Image (cartoon, rainbow, N blue to C red; front, top):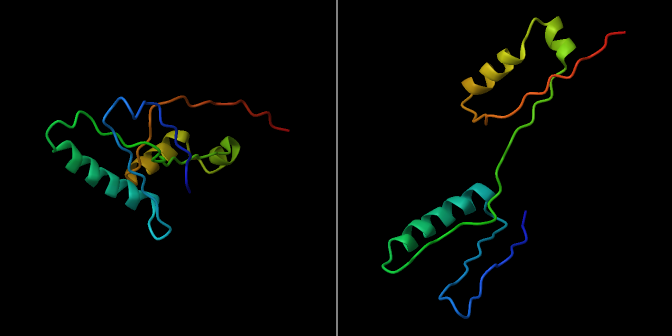
Length: 104
């Protein structure tokens, strides 16, 4: 999936260039890995002030849990978090919203 990019600099007054990577035969992860390799090599060049990678997408997982069903199986939110952490997933700190559910 291509993302639009915006250049926020005056390329005429600054010595800069932009490299754009894309390819149907490459995954997003492969393109980012290649961009990291290019970045490392460019940063090793004398007089290169900075190199940045922009437009790389991040992955996230959203887990929606039915509290009543979890309770019926005697499973807690903490159990779900522990299982996800055991699978070596990065779970950022954030807010866990507990919405009260009325039973009929």
